[in-house]
Image (tube, rainbow, N blue to C red; front, side, top):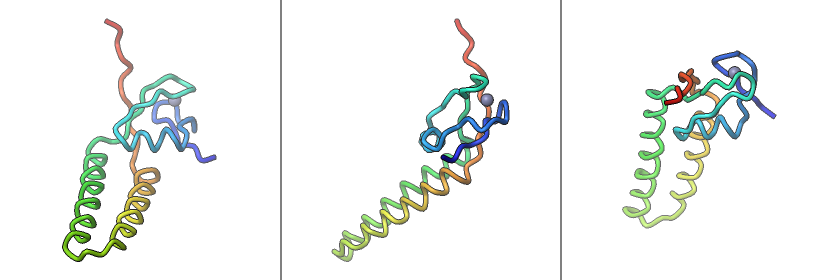
Length: 100
Ligand SMILES: [Zn+2]
């Protein structure tokens, strides 16, 4: 199974599932070093805008042209965006939560 490098310790400890969750604004802790990891926020914000645009665009076309095959394009674009999300969004380090 594919794994992604932790930006703290450079070990491949981030699972595919965790990488996908990072694309949805989650944070995960590295299993090796315990460091908190997140996706790069500016890139992630653009990705979120693309997801929103994707849904609005194709759903809008369904309404204008009454043709439901556009929903298929929506699903296809969604999968493509997911692939970009998983494989092209860089990870960044977060500071450990300091106990209060
Ligand atoms: Zn690590």
